[in-house]
Picture 1 (cartoon, rainbow, N blue to C red):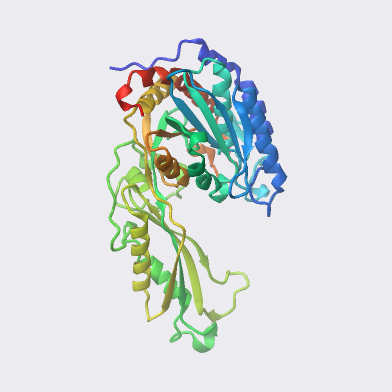
Picture 2: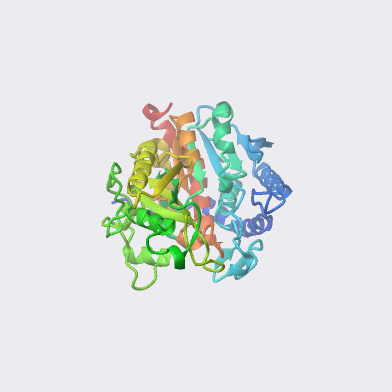
Length: 462
């Protein structure tokens, strides 16, 4: 049986010694409100964050550090370190922009001030993705010149706004970013202390459905009853998207495949998701299957009169944004077509239905049988002292598919400092500093040893 002993060398000690600096750097980076939306925060704050990231990675030993203009106007940070003769090159990804705080009154401490409580560090971006930026930095600082492979860095500046600048840029800059392995540091562990690689991502195939029944709103006292209510019609339509158990029930969309990675126990999921006592989980599959291997339909928003300020009217029009998450192995275009046909066919009373297709995103499945995965598996297991597991992610990272198409021989690994307690994108986001330390050490081990694993697997090398 394989034994996962703690790393018994100076590297673990060096990473531990760097954690004080890591906290100071994260505090500074969190203090910069780098929300890539000029309607909410000045654009120069994103530029300030980008310059800080550039200078920090230059200080960590990367050369040719610079800001790259992206098609969406939000600069990316680039840096590189050449590979030793015959050694592979690794591309490190992260992003320095963050979500807006979503109301500072919902935070227990200022969102742009790193605050320690109960052993965790709180602040917007502390985990997603500035904590991952710091993990990259700490790994490189701990190694110094002892890297066994070349390194390239790309730090995105508008990932949270989904403007697509880097996705558009990558195919035009293949020579600049080419690598044998890619570490996408924008994910995390199944739970704190559980080493995890994310191997699948669901795609997107959503629509806006609009229902019309009347020329205009009509007084409910005078016309309510025989007059068809568009909001009621919309509710009846979206209610047909699931069966009584909560499974997706759309003709042309299959249930999906099984899941062979980590087991997500229902009680843990209920706690992680904040499911209220007495409220049941939905669907007939396991939690992991429902999250990562099956399609999921959610109603993200409805256009209708709010309760406060509403009038006694039968509604003439209503609309909903319907999200369809598509698992690997499912064609997002075909799934979107099936969703649109279902919504159009479910209209009651002859209500008029219009479906507007939203931009699609393809699902992603990583290749896991190459030397990079073997080296990262060893690095994570050695760092955490337990076997590495795999999970999926219900969300989408379109960049992964662009990278896979642009660099088809590169192994893409998703990992990072995030775990369920981080509450990424929500108020009171936080990070466990032990996760930064462990992920930084695992990456440092990988960058030190990957060249050896690469040399021993020539048949799998490009």
